[in-house]
Length: 317
Image (tube, rainbow, N blue to C red):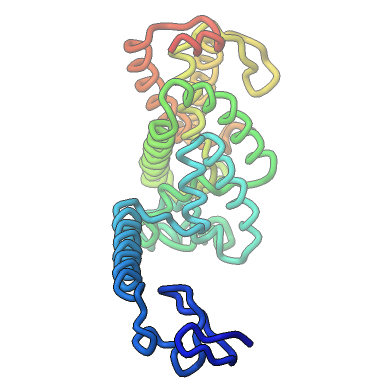
């Protein structure tokens, strides 16, 4: 209860927001008590309202001027990983793909078939006594790339990814993530094309098999792309010490020559219609093609940065 400032009546009072005086229900409206602060109060409210709208508009313009944040997704995470470190990104994708190979039809969809015709597919399957090829290269052209994310077993995966980790990391420090990914894909593509060309030469020379081994057997693995990085490092650090096939110590320039020599011998025996034990199963044509790409690119880097004696010299780049 209080006293109305207009009529003096004792009643429940209300405070006017413009003049701060107390009034009864009959005089509480500004126009009923001739409010002295009404005009000033209304102007103040208009100003505050205008400022609020201007501030909101400014925030909207600032927000619209900034790039929209991308929603988190598996694809965006993969792209970010490649941008930060291509070597780790490639290894992660390859390992994840290997884990998916237990899914029926997954490997058949992504493995590289060098057969160019349906008749070649049928003749190879007939000679093998089982379904070895499921399609021609023309039917699944994407496999020239996807072959790199498939592997025949844990040791195959381990050998390729460990080798790529050591050599890929060194190269990436020199050329960055984007160029690392580019040369990995280019050398992998070249290796696939080299494998396809050589296997079809064998097929047209000797038919569906040599010594019981199909001439057009499907390919899996990233060896061609991985070997390219061995070639790059060999051009930059020819005196660096490495372990050929993980247990023979030698300078990397010697290791590359020994590796290339073994692969060339394997190819020559195949061209002669013979299949060597153990290495006869190697995709030597893919390895040599990938190595050639790596040596070519490594020479370009050497001409640009100069030769280094040890891996530690990478800090000078």
